[in-house]
Every structure is written in C-alpha cells, then in structure tokens.
Image 1 (cartoon, one colour):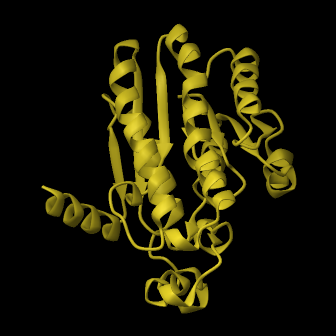
Image 2: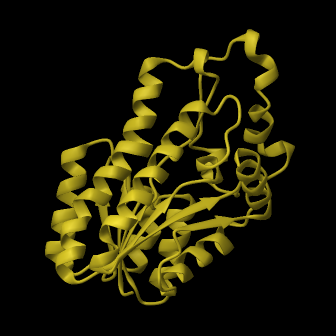
Length: 257
C-alpha cells in the first residue's frame, strides 16, 4: 500500500498516521485547513507529502481534491476519512448551526469523500477505505447526542458500502477508538451553550480538562494498528481500539441483544 489519501492530518490520528507512513517511504496526500500546522512535514518530505487545503464541509472541494489526487498520483491505495470533531451538549442545549456543522463535517463530509473515491478505486482494480469512527458509533452517552448521530450514521453507511464494493476488491474498515491523548479532547472539541437544568449530564467537562488526567489511549499505538489493518485480507469491517472502548462496546451490544 504505497499511496494514501488522509483527511485531517494536522493533528490526532491523521497526523500520527501520516508521520509513520512518510517515515516508511510512503506517499501521503494529506488534507488540512491550515498548512502551517504541518509545515514540518512539508519541509521534511517535499517529494512524498502532498499537502492539500480542504474544508470537508465543501462538497465541491472534496470532489475536486479526490479527482485531482487520482489524476496526479495515478493510483491511490488507501482512502482514510479522518477529519471530524466532537460536539458536547445535551440536545436542548445545541443550536441549529451547531447541529448542521457537525453533520456537514463528520457525516456528510465523510460520505462525499468515500462516494467520490469509489469509481476510481473500482477502475484501478481495488483499494482500501478506512473510516475513523469511534466506539461512540456503538455506544451512546448523554450530552453527546449529535456526535453519536454522526458516528452511528457513518457506520451504517460504511457497512452498506462495504457489501456493495467487495466484488470490486475494495475493502472497508470502520475504526472505533476509545479515548486517546489527541486534540480531539484537548483542542478541537466544541461545547454547546450549557444550561443549569442539565448540570448532572455535564461530566464531560472533566474529560475535556487535561489537568484532571489524560485519556488512557496512546494515539501512536492506535495509529500503528490502523496502518497494519490494510495488510489484513479480507478487510476487517470493524476495529475497536482501547480496553475501555472494548468493554463499553461489549456491554452495549450485549444489552441491546
């Protein structure tokens, strides 16, 4: 798997994966909203890091990045839909704009990226799609309703697409990490305008405060497991990363059954 296209490589799993792949001589087409956040990679890997400016809520821009990338690199082996963020707040606390923004980013942006890539992957004879989701695509907690809505949604989309494209040698993997020491918690997460009526549901504020203790997951190890997954055939449909994520997923699915 020589060439990868990864969205959201300025931080978190996207950046960790990009660094590891570039170190191994792979080519990465990485999308960011601001190039200065990856200036070190641009300088260090001028020939193998193809940095593209992209806001995944811009449907036409997503389609253009995909088409231009396949035209430039001829073949792309792995598409990683990674760009996204967390939105915390109970349903009544959320504004319509906040709801629209997270759906446009986490759900619609991922759908358009994957859909736009399918014809190219099919015509080149196969490839791998990796959707970075969360164990929050299987487990739901209060004050996370819209985040769960996007993750439950993209998992249903990917599970259906995996069945549609298997005959074309295209594998789809949904990655469900638990809490990790990334900017997802300590930088990019957004919080709604909180109401005192829901104070008992605001325990996430402790989670977002790194002075209260960091998340247990190691993003470097998780990134490595994600990279390794492309060598598994058939592609694993789901990967749960982290002991807390695994235990919560098992509990939730057992309860559902």
